[in-house]
Amino acid sequence: MSDTRVDEGLQDDEDAGRREPTDAQLRRGLGGLASDVAFYGTTRVFLKSLAFLLVPLYAHFLTPAEFGVLELVLAVAALVDVVIAANMDGVFARFYFDQEGRLWRRKIITIYFLVESLYPAIVVGVLIGLARVLSEAVFGVEIYALLFIVVLVDVYLTNIVDLPMTLARLRRKRATFAFYSLTRGLTQIVISVLLVAVWELGVKGILIASLAAVGVAFVITAREWVRDLVRQIDWRVAREMISFAWPGIIGGLAFYTLNLVDRFFIQHYHGLADSGLYGIAFRYSQIVIVAVFAFRLGWAPWHYPWLNTDGHPSMVARGATYYFFVVGFLVVLTSTWIRPAFELILPEDFHESSRAVAPLALAAMATGAHRVFKVGIAVKKRMRLMAPLAVIAAGLAIGLYFLLIPPFSFVGAAWGTVAALAAFALLVLAVSQRLYPVPWDWYRILLAAGGAAGIALAALAIDAWVGMAVSIGPRVGLTLAFPLALLALGFFPPDDRAKLRAIARRLASRVRGKPHDPAGRGPGTEAPT
Image (cartoon, rainbow, N blue to C red):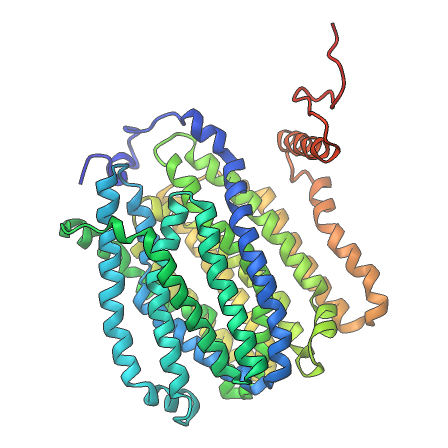
């Protein structure tokens, strides 16, 4: 590989290879991150909004126990996905930007495709042959074997479709990314409605709809990468990518423990119905996950181009600060209003699941936090360090599940997940900061994260002790308290407030249809002579 490799230009005791940011990078700045995150987030919000509307539909055709079956099948699929994905999407993004030449990037695309199509085919093929064994092991009966076959094929195809989706982001082809996402999402929603509501296929219909959608996505996204495949493989680079990726399996398994093993604990101690209630809570906590996912999609393409500049650490710190503000506000909204929403849209059997939404929303924020804090580990290509950190956090999670799930069921699982993910984020921060110091603004980060957590707890108290009609006023107050308190306590520095005011004036001018004066005098005002 060439001398432009990052490890050779980012030694801890050298500044060789560092450069000032270009004008294009300066123009992108924090606004570039906000633009990418807003775009990806809007796409996800649209799709998730439609998906959220399907949950009440499913709730009228599925019992909580059937939701429990769905949760456990998907949990097994997620475990398989961890093993076959092996963190290759993160490795792909990291190596893609090592060099700017087209041939280099085509080689990286080819290596990714070979690794993520051949190795997963072996794993998935073996597991399909063992579908009856899987069903017996998870449920104690063999009748769910077909569900495992459907979901395993889905996982395999999704793994390949991740390549063009990642490419669209790295190439900043946002409209293309949206087209691919919307096509897959809308296809799944339409087929789900037909199979569940019309033909009443239940859990099987939901899984078949997902498989059909990823099949459509596989076909329409092929144009994004097929022409980039090359015949000549640089096996040295392939070995380096695999070496960079394999610790992701260990870390991924530990992270799986942090996020999905609790379903099996709930089933063991409290049955499929409680597992189903937990699944409903998890789905609506994904209101926050949408923002975390959107941030993740925009984060790497935004900060990696700054990598060899003096401005990289400070830009990472600024991006992290606003991550906690935006995601924290979504935690507040979700925690405050989820109980009224459940009483409005779900059958009464599912209302109790709202008690787990607030802690799961906080867990989602912690999930994104660890991705933000691991920037130093990624920059230094020390991803193998993530595995032992994740194992430690997973061990903590298992202990908390044994402690909290027997007495508190799915609510205990949610709080155990929060604690373990928060500990993981702090461990990642401690290690990453030693490798690549970043000037985090701790006052503002703690203000946003702590404020969101405090309001989430207050919302749970309102849910428990205040009647629904009387609670509307306090809920509005909690919602407004977050941004107003941050504003009063100095979360927004003067420069950022000035930029926000300028953006507001521009938007107001566009609404009125009048030209905006960039000097701030307002539209239609003449300059003094």
